Image (tube, rainbow, N blue to C red):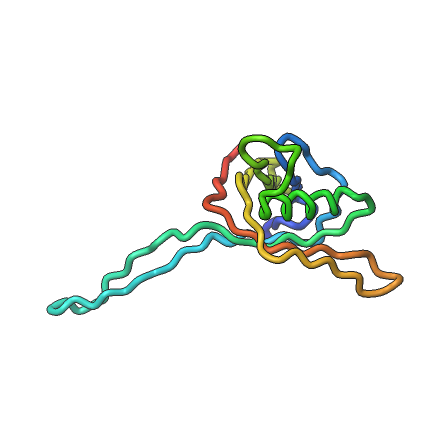
Length: 150
């Protein structure tokens, strides 16, 4: 008998810019990678190398479609923050959050991953054809993405 597994329908993802939750994004795929480097050191007189782990933050990709201009609001907020050019914001720039909630299909238990302050690289907008939806694929980095068990 096979064990139940997580599927995409068991993962709810929301993006938040400052206090505004963006709900009109159709998330196609999401990836969160916890970056951990390992370092080996060979010590004279020992028969095995010593291995250390070094936490280097979190990275990922977010691919989505949208039938609303909210997707362009996300792009606009990111580029304004990166350029430090939003005259409507005084003080600290708005942080962009990602919340990813997983629900076990077997027993309903939940886990929540929150990426509290995402930083982005290039922001490509792909219009591949007249019959295809516009795709957004963002690469991001962050210092942490804690996991909470609900």
